[in-house]
Amino acid sequence: LTSGLSMELYPNPASEEVNLSCVAANSGTMTVRVFDLAGQLVGNHVFEATVGENKFNLSIPGLSSGIYFVELSSGSEREVQKLIRN
Image (tube, rainbow, N blue to C red; front, top):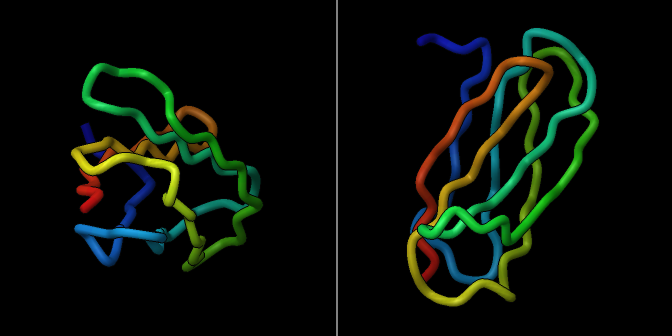
């Protein structure tokens, strides 16, 4: 399943904040949701994206150390990547 969204998380592992870089085919609202390994939603962010490359900053000091999944969605497209909080 190929998505029109591609996302990069850095630094990863991260401690205080993580940068999310993505390329959007269309402008509009993008939702970034962070889930723990149990599937619980632990973070929810909404951004306005423009066509082309977008960079967003996620602050994660409230997350405990461990593995999380970051889901970027826009319309019917979504991309998920693993994030390690150290």
